[in-house]
Length: 87
Image (cartoon, rainbow, N blue to C red; front, side, top):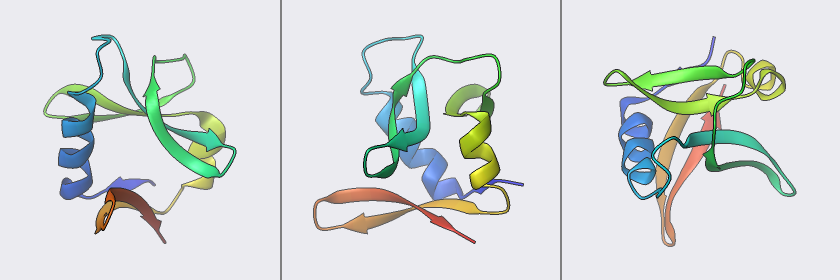
């Protein structure tokens, strides 16, 4: 089962507030360089992570299987926060 730290939830919530489309959520999905975080809309087979009663994070079925039994967290880096996945 995928877990998410409270720090990650708060960080994603802050990031989502910067997205102009009110129907968009954040998605963890595949990019050319691995997994990335980007605004997107919900699809039928998405796993939806809630925070404070609002849909916050979308994860498609394939990525959800990859992230099974992991914890999503956020770490501070010189160029800003980055999400990390831990087993």
